[in-house]
Image 1 (cartoon, protein in one colour):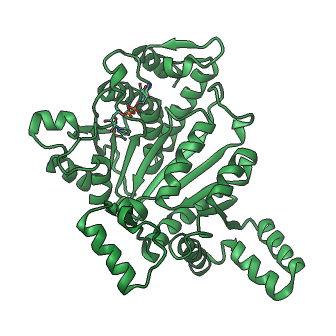
Image 2 (cartoon, helix red, strand yellow):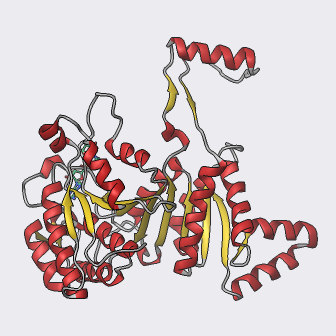
Image 3 (cartoon, helix red, strand yellow):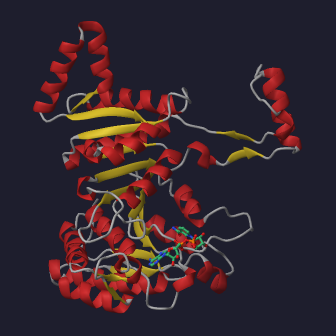
Length: 409
Ligand code: NAD
């Protein structure tokens, strides 16, 4: 990205705890930039509206100006939004993703020392999830049981397509899961480019291709094919391994795999989703960059975040690597139960901001933010949601957490 020294970055403060965590985050972002670059660089923050606040002020949940700002300025950041009930909008986040075609949901997962976790070796968890963001069951193509459309569809399936496997046609709802070569390839390409840039040891395609052979199985096959076709000299795939094994035997295949590893090539492998979820608990160190489809990615993101105790602090971004558009976001909701109480944890938004600065190439800023957070957590200083699980944890109000973060930058 070509980033000016004084970029304009649109932000949505968000609903519920949004204003509190945004105020905290903006203070820390500005201080971290100042610390890293003095007055050579600065962000011009531009507030745009969405969610409940937008609806109250403009009558629209997602005003056109907000979409335009994210389109024009390429990179933006947002707090959590109240999901409108009814009114034909499924989710504002989904609307933003679709409008800007943000096809990657990026979720890094790592552990911060001091944060309580349910696993024995959280330090071994260091993964980056690339979740496809536009296809799969999230296309929302469904028919409710008993409706005329569901009956019509069943009739078509039964009479035209010869589908005889529907057990209870009268009471069946139906869903269609579109998964394309184009959609899968652009996701896997982004994951591979990231893995190359980060010198990651492996990429794992996670899928349920044993059951859904053409959709999830397609994702796996297309992923391998793309890897070999476009990045052949930089990686070695387990598909190549299997072919070699078939043609020349296990010894030759093992030798090729070892040679690829010795040459620093990235190993591209695949695993069935259920096995992946088990393996990440037992041997998380086996995984680095994960490329997966939409629904699998949903489950995986939260399970891995929980493994490092970070379900409330996990950062995320939605990115279109072709156009450069990206929106970084707190992954939790609006926490209406604690809004306005100076209790909210701004860490998810802060770490999303750190990701954003990395994306802009302002690496020093991201580093300062995550290092300061690490220092606080090691001292067992945190907002109450985390501190209450830390032995002798010190629960700080949001405002004080912000002050301590600034002091530790
Ligand atoms: P939630 O994440 O808002 O809250 C779940 C629990 O986690 C609550 O007890 C809350 O107090 C706590 N929590 C969440 N964020 C916290 C933080 N930063 N600091 C401390 N504690 C925190 O989930 P919910 O209650 O299911 O949803 C509330 C609203 O948020 C709904 O309107 C929902 O649609 C919306 N939502 C938005 C997003 C988003 O914009 N990305 C994501 C999830 C939910």
